[in-house]
Image 1 (cartoon, one colour):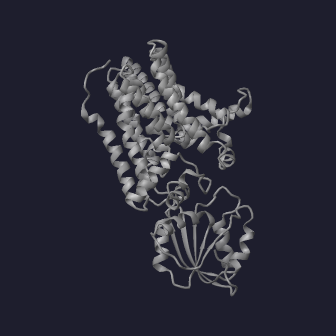
Image 2: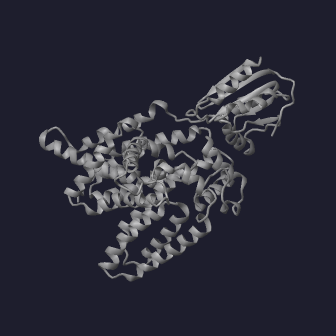
Image 3: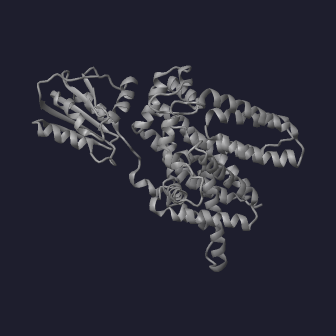
Length: 494
């Protein structure tokens, strides 16, 4: 093991990454559609009601929901209160990942490289400031692996803590069962098979009881299951490895995993190449423990996805980013060592060179925004008149509703909510014909892949029927219009 202490300046990248994430947190972007739907469930329900299936086709771990509710009650109905738990999870993950990487590599410099890349990775940066459970998945998965590698199972206190940690993970993270299964198998081999420590069955019995109870109470027969199976239908691994569907799944999963998660898109082959080198290097160097912890969760998740129990895609595999990064850094280290033998000037610290480019995948648009409904709604409240009508595009309504219910704004105007007519926009016509006088129209979360742009259709239709645009305000991901309409029919309101 390399026991030489490294220069603290190597942690500068980690500090920079943390500062970037704190700036993003306090920038306080608006909740977008998916966040607002989960936020409405947390805002509108009490603790007992959060144990029931959620509205808006949302699903989240019960422990996560209860903590989020507590944070709202303590800190108020704000975006930052909702995003505080993901931020804390990110901060917890950094030192835990450092300890895990240091243990697996037996090299502190490589561990620093891993956490630097972690702080700079686009998906980590984004979900550290997102009202979703995925950063909690990361923190819980890493904590389980840390405990597996560092706990002294001869100490009765440690295996009680191990049992407790697993039980907590099950209610805080739906995906933790994968990490628990891999870690449990590792402990079984090293502590039971090799050292005959049968008392560890207490841990697995506790995990099984909690998981079984949680599954039958909150997962089995969940009403959103059919929707989720359809929504993620392309994220389940086909069973036939010789089929074209299997080939398409491998290509799609590889490009998305190493393209979208790292923010590199078409350059996905760069991290994927280092990932493959990292696996080969670990095999060559006989780092079997490292290989086990970076590959076992991936393979187990793929098997589970083949059974259509949990999709393998995007944010649902965010918890695997540390495993990918450890493997990639191992590949970089292998390549730098090989180059160092050929070129004298190449030093081990060169592994940081490609890492420093990772933030450029999002810094050009920093701080990140998505759908700025809040400033659009603030402008609307500041400039509305008492008799104005408000027409809200159907996907814009949930963020609007969250801010209204959270007492950020207070609208008493007649409000019309557009129905979902993406495939048949002509069905809007009867509602649009009924608009009379000054009308505000709010759009966001447009389905840009649809054949018809509903925003353009609506504005064009109204202009064609002699409406006049008095004001247009554009925000990132949202647009607000003020029109003077000429119809004298009464408006249908909700």
